[in-house]
Length: 172
Length: 261
Image (cartoon, rainbow over all chains, first blue to last red; front, side, top):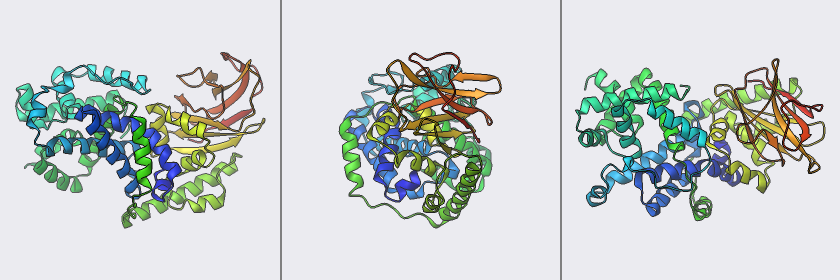
């Protein structure tokens, strides 16, 4: 499909947009929290999918993973580039706050599975992963927030993700 | 930094949790570490599942803006290295196409196959869906869940198209690795209100109704539907049944398409 997009097929892009907009906007908003800023970043990401579709390499994974990787990276870049101490201070550990995002798109089964697999992790693995991915914190920041050593966070993130991968049956 | 230290960073890298300088170090390391690369790929996919679990419907204006912006935005040309890979993929698509013809399924014409020379497998999906897409199909695809997205965008997704005995075409996108298929139909004749098209996964063990969301009903054509736990050799079948569906097919299938996973 992205090969059609790469050749300028707007119809194909509409279809791709339909598949990816919800997850892209969702993950950006999870990290940034601010709806207006999230919308802006999500738009940039989806336009980036259009612009760079020719660079997508299907041998390296699905288009959804590619787009969501770009989306998360952009959201995190936005967090880091803003020297927004005030913004972040207002929100101690935002990833642990209950989800305030309504209007959840379909995919309840996926959500259940993610929740179930997250539930199978140790507390430290789970909190490290949630703070890093949903919170957009770097691992040194995660270590500081959780009051544990840097090396511990690095290994917990990796062990936890590997356990998630196996729990969710990700083929790799 | 020692190699072992770097390897433990796969997880943090996949979550974009490295500091700037570490990210650069790690990306250099990745070039030479095939096992790290493979691990990163699996962990990125895992991270993508975390993202999909947070999907929310964006404001409608976002779509208008993005689509409008595509008309003003020049696309990048492909990288030379990708061409070779894509050419291989295109040959593979052409080979599949021949196999499907041999299997009696209506497939992409050779002309189209040539036209998709830059194709990956997913391109075939695009042809199957976008060329025939009505607005309704686009809408229903839009409403589909993350599981359907994963099948349609899977690297190993294959497309099969067949006509039903009552007219209209059914397109099946199947991912062997995910053991799942997405079924869409177009142009099937409308049924009296008391009847529906029901989709089945038929195996040697019998037929089971497909799809977890609805009970496997194609109430309207163009609706797409996920069949999970499919394996090579299963057939996707469609029968006409009383509205509400049945637990076993009660009429002669209008379609029985073997899955060539």
